[in-house]
Length: 165
Image: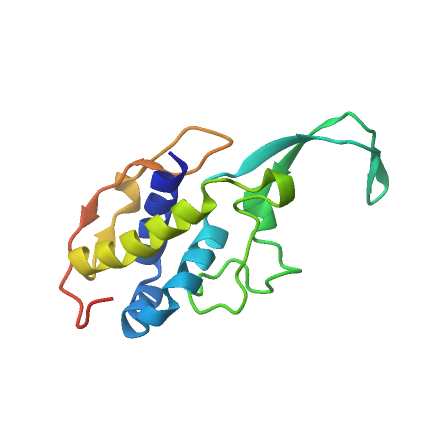
């Protein structure tokens, strides 16, 4: 579910940013970086829950040990302190690594497989559908606070791309 959501989110992002689709076409060697940027830009897992093991100070507030907290992964991946242009999709972004797959003992076990699937699926999709379009009115989004992705996505095939990715 998370990988299909990520693929759907990526198809939408590349439809909204055809310049980035062209960049990938002209520079297929950036696919690994592109996958990381797509993970950062619109990740599937938007929230995750944790329990504090000790008191945590954030600004003027102390969250006591044993508290349930929700971490907003989607917002963290758009942190302007980390990426000054965080709301822009840039497949050639230097160091786009995000926290989409968690960290440390909470790192997603399926992250390597998801990255591999994206490295294969994105170029295959772009090659098959060319200069495609997606009408935002035709997208139905998952109704979830935790997971983001389309449940229905109508893609209109465009002209073939000049060179395969």
